[in-house]
Image 1 (cartoon, rainbow, N blue to C red):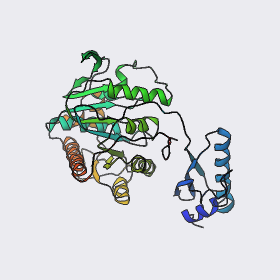
Image 2 (cartoon, rainbow, N blue to C red):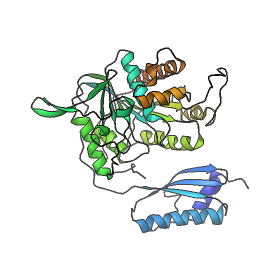
Image 3 (spheres, rainbow, N blue to C red):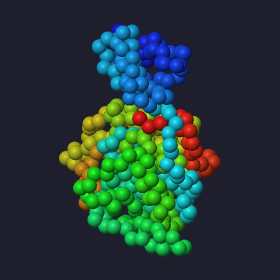
Image 4 (tube, one colour):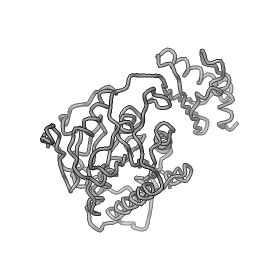
Length: 374
């Protein structure tokens, strides 16, 4: 028997959550179902955040799949808690002097999001724009390394009687990262509200001056930092980065869906496919699709968003990041030209967005409806 979404939904319709009075399917709690052969991954929204309740929902979903669909399925249940919680007080205004704010996102780690963000920012400077970048990857900052500023510490300056942070500058990009304030071997272990407060300080306690583009390198996932960002500032749009691999694409789809939620509604500028293929130097005409072929392109078509670029897997990109000199600075090399093409594609998408859509407003999530972090 071939497992399908219809069979899975039929199986889950046998579950009724406490105090709901209708099946878990009819209540709308099932937000997404993905089938991988005979394995199933389910996103379920629950209103009660207790461990016992979440465990009960998880066990009942797995039991329903085994009893009514396929008894040998491996079932993964992702629980999305949609319950009122205390929000960190954050601002929702535009940053003075900043024209466009672009979030670079990936719901999965390890796909090269920060590398794409760094090269995008440097390429923008090369094209004549004034650019800043915030390393909002609070738990795993890397921009200070990629820009050759490891060990540097920003200074405080006085602006109109208020103490502000002066961002450091490298390759013409103004940069601020939590990595400047944490020791290189120090783990950042913060709960969500602390991470949100840190992001708020990076945004509002910094003197950015006049910028055409402020690039925000987000952490992996769809959590507190992401919600804090869309509440704090009106984003021009978001770029999602993924590899062609099915596992990465599944998470990338969740990232796109997060920005497109009615309660968030941040324009998705498109998808960049990183590590798209590998070409050995000795075989310049050959392409080896190590992580799969054109998976992100297919996802972009499926979700009806722009496919911005395919960036190949090139050793010099990794070496350039480690050396603190982004690969787009490598002149007329093929990889530098690919990264420059990517930047121009993103710019075209931004211009299209700014012509056709009204300015984005900061999100108000006072009751947390429709937005929850796993």
